[in-house]
Image 1 (cartoon, rainbow, N blue to C red):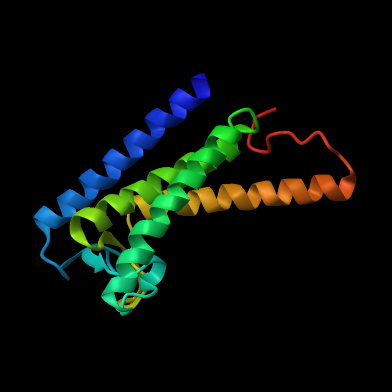
Image 2: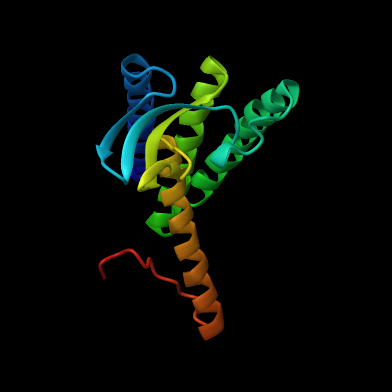
Length: 175
């Protein structure tokens, strides 16, 4: 039960950090404005993402985007919460991954429900901003870190199945 409460606090902290950072961007930068941080590599920008990751479906019909980006994520959040509860007694990094996904999904859902789009602001690029990786935010970072943890888990599970070992340890533990 202690793990559940620890992860719940982490989820709350990440959602608050995500929303505060987005609010700071909205109050300090005009839409489309950028502030170079590391010339030729990184800027803080005010971007409004109407689509999903990397702007996927940003130009889709409004009625479809509202259903797809509001209803589906709410259902997925319920499923991720179920997975989080189900994995509390497994390796810590698995339940951590689900907690990070849940925090990121909720952070972006708050934007979609309140603004109709997601505020992104981390902008990485090479030499010129025109050569940029899609902008992202704290919530997206949580989801990306979770994806890495799940890939690690997949590798551990795959390796254990190949070796016939049914007793899989936590690959991120120090023991």
